Image (cartoon, rainbow, N blue to C red; front, side, top):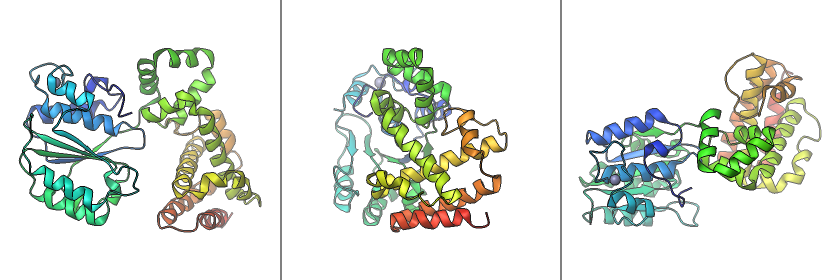
Length: 348
Ligand SMILES: [Zn+2]
């Protein structure tokens, strides 16, 4: 989403009303810290939020109603990605953000800003900084130049060292509600969104559920990713039910999708989907009125939950937590799934 037009102001950023108001208020009072962790799932708009934050910090129209104003030279330059004092740092095609990159950032941070009063570094996927890189980063974080601000976008904050986390307040982007998502899609993807909503209500609701409240994900789904995502979600439910009931072909059932789970990140996504599905299954079992986070409607969730007791579902949720951690620890993927299945069935 970073490449698209994301301004004019915080009001244009979907949902997260309280967070946006707090950030704008902090900036107006001149009380911004030197570093923030901007947390949120993939597609939650972290990069966009970081750019709005950066623009607000150096906006020249601070007396105006909206912050950032979206109209001054500074705002327009941030929007076009050409402001010399707003610097994006990413890992390029590498899997981690290494110490060399962070050393460059550190050296650059001691050079005065060229146009604005601040110099802002947007460090993308900061959780992918190696430990060395994080330690190097700490040195500048402990005694930052007065004008420097570091905005760390991050999906897994626990991978940041506690010493980094303690110096950077966390701003958590929360998923959009179904209503906020509808509004977002209709304003952002106008005709395309309206056509789908009016011609195929079921697919529209499925898209909103499948986005998990992430605006970036919703736009990708609207752009033709819905079919593939449907396959992934169906696979998650099929595998989950197979594991709980111990059907011998549970793991075989994912064989056609081995391409899907052979990659660790895909396996983790699969486990996240399974965990979301379980949360919904538990909610409908308990007649909990909370909004669903995976199934498009309560009927489908009830149908999936029907064969299982609350205890079955709770045990499966524990097994999935462990499975996720073991994937993080580089366990053998298929073996880890099989072990999780055994745990789910224990005491059944
Ligand atoms: Zn401005």
